[in-house]
Length: 119
Image 1 (cartoon, rainbow, N blue to C red):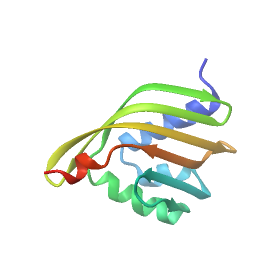
Image 2: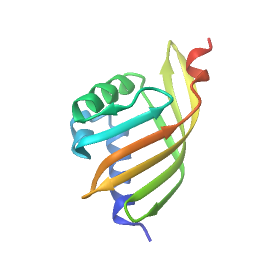
Image 3: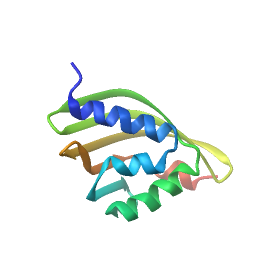
């Protein structure tokens, strides 16, 4: 059975695939934090909008392999592909979403940055 939190994240991922920044921002609380580790976290919707807009310029595509949810917590394993520095970068990602009131309050992503820095 899919939880309400998992359904929110499914819709969020679909908006990401459409590169719909305005819709994506509707999924966040005003004081949300997105921390794509090991980079600096974006705190608040304005900072998240700026970072999301930058990431979307890389034409990201993701494949979710596993998603589990417990209450307001949703975790994913996925593979992301994007165009970075004129080349395709493939990255394994573990993501954790914490929801409050049906919106994302915290989004942490764990991935290896080395594919982004090696030619």
